[in-house]
Image (cartoon, rainbow, N blue to C red):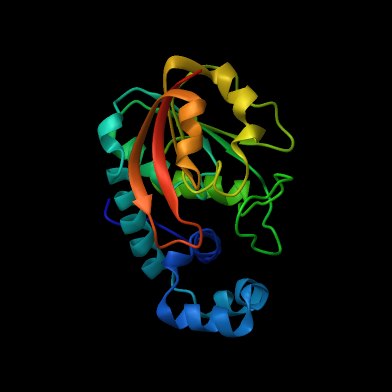
Length: 230
């Protein structure tokens, strides 16, 4: 696999979730006309799913490379705010025998908010399209479960790895999930996420590794790998 298979609806959702997938031409259109018209009109006409699929694959491969040395085969993953699931598809292809649980919100916020959403209402996903993407790109339905944060009972088994890139503690406060995470973590569970306040988590976890620093985003962030709640 060197690219992701995307239909037009998936390509539009991927671009909404990750602005770096947008071509220079579409970035100009989005800046000129605004996010609403871009999402609901211009992206339907000008977006190129094959091009987005190639770019999305490269971006997700680069993300995986930042922490692939922490991963192993036959692990049980929890993904919080995964987008359309490109990272998980790659983990599935590189590390055989892994299972995935996705916690998602099933709507797209009308307005982008930068910084924390203190009410935990910010969302940019469609659960049906997430399911479609996973199946189109090599995952079997037996390898994953998808949970709607607002409707479903969340899974309570122990997870080996929990990932939340540019979601948990990047768009909303970690405290929304801390009680739940303590229930699904063992002492060996690895939690990988991006945060604008990495130093704070030295008081939350016994082990904190900074594995990536990003100074080019709207909110400068660090990716951290954590173990063992204090």
